[in-house]
Length: 321
Image (cartoon, rainbow, N blue to C red; front, side):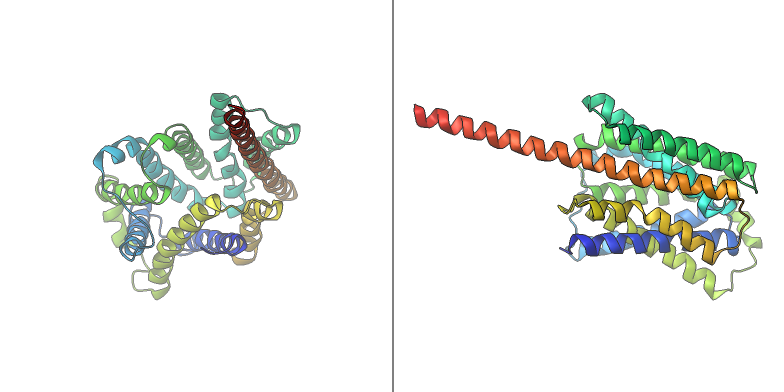
């Protein structure tokens, strides 16, 4: 298995590259047919994952009884990627990132409530700041595309429900993280094809002016391959035993790198107020991510110590007998 830092760097690079590629296809080439774009992207992702599984890198089960409980998450996943494409096609990347930061918060609060976890002051303060920064970014966005912000709201809600369901029901479902991702891809391909007909994207796409442009096909192919690679490395990063502060900061600041890279690659309008709001959002998100994972790591270490102490006491009892 690759080292922790190799995985972290790979994830950050893939995260930035995937989102920039998606933005290029959606906004620069104006391929604004999200059912077709996401159907293609998830189909490529499914082929990549299935190919890796066939080569023995991952184990995939086909137990229907395990897949059915995951169905609600698959539905939220489809709505999330569809609305995310609609929003990203109309909003600047910094705005998209600053508002998307709040997606993790509902699942985090739900997990705390169910498990009765305590939180630190820095964790609470960063959580509130992330939400405030997202609202300020929405208010100060100079382009203020109402349709884009509407789809962004749908994206945040659907992604939040996906995260909540994954947090609450995910551990009880007998599927690995890779299997869950693969079934989300499969379901997306199946669901988005009829949706492209019903919503009219299949007919409207006939008027797309760049069907013969090589950059379009390269962008679509890269979006699928990079997206699958990003999700797989993200799963590996979450499972790596390397929980150092620098590792957590690197993962959290992948969004900061995306914001900075987008300012270089794409043209857009920005005001001082919006720039300050975005900076506040990504900074608070970094603090929130680090304090959240620090708490989890501390709790995990405490559980291990308690378990070891319990085993020692049981051994001492046996010896005394």
